[in-house]
Length: 435
Ligand code: EPZ
Image (cartoon, rainbow, N blue to C red; front, side, top):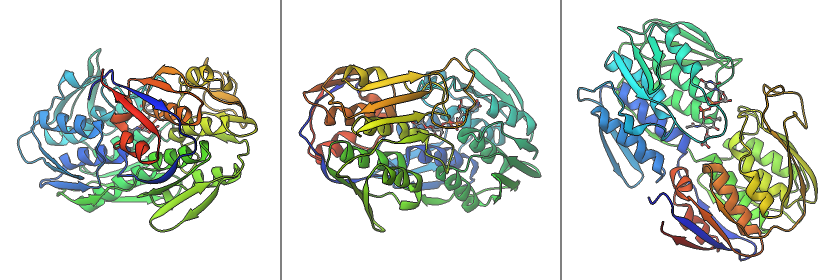
């Protein structure tokens, strides 16, 4: 991957065609971490070809695990003596090091991980992870370089997350599975990718129950063994390609992502005038006329935050005023500048618009937007700030008049499986310019 590579995009009108999505980015890497807990190798299939898998494989190898990647299969063999230090060279590359703490405490007893990165979409602290590990009996210290933890043995505890955090829930699942005794986790995230991780751990031998009211109950066991799993389809990619069809007035058929992962997305797009054909194998969307929308992002089963940026682009193509209120991350509208430069009429507000107040109602954070749709977009030269914003730029560039030049496409390649080929397959004219 060349970090400064760019795409030149020439819009061709409506995008038509088929796209196949692979397994979810936000599930595959967590399964690779879970594999550290087994005493035999684990395998995941349907793995996407993305930078995040390579980065995570690099971390696991640095710890001493063997990782083999062939086609869509990733095999992690954790049987060697592991070291408890994720090297600082992985600082800031993704969110995965923080999830390694629990498994490495079980395997090695003392752990150092570097500062986590991920997209710059808000403060993204790791306090829930740290508090949960302390509740489970670890001594944890945060330093300027990262997090250090040690524990002779983790012990089950009752933990309540202040917010249903995906990563926070995953840290508890990954840490409690081999802890001594029972862990009760209240206010858990129940995103499909989290449930998938819980099922994988169950397959490895963990005793995990999901009770009503977002409560996981985990009875620690003595050992876990390796397991195999086919990663479920990436619902963020699936949604984004459906939007690419709708925003350009075309029709995209997406294979590889089950309908039940897209329920809220489908109902939201229905309200905007989209018509769907849905089978066991594919989902197709089209619209004769797009209506504006009022949408708030929420933890699952709400409208997910990672669908927010493509939705905003779609709203620029709907006649009338739409409102989008981001309640999960406080700073997830950094990409709006580029859409404004393309001619979109969008205004940012720090108030909670379109619904009840959220955690950010008194924060100095512009987390609501009003979009006056129906204005033509024109091409732009822009630098992609993060994965999801980057994809939104591509959709906007495809829906615009005139060519666009998008820099830093490495963000797209970290999170989407072969996006260049998929867009080219839909008829979009793209040229890749090496940096
Ligand atoms: C995961 O991030 C995903 N990343 C994100 O996808 C996704 O947007 C997010 O979940 C929400 O669905 C991965 O799975 C790698 P959180 P995560 O913990 O786990 C606050 C993408 O584009 N919080 O659910 O980091 C946090 O600041 C990415 O693929 C704390 O305050 O998200 C946020 O406001 C972007 N303290 C809220 O909770 C903590 O210790 C939800 O974050 C942890 C989180």
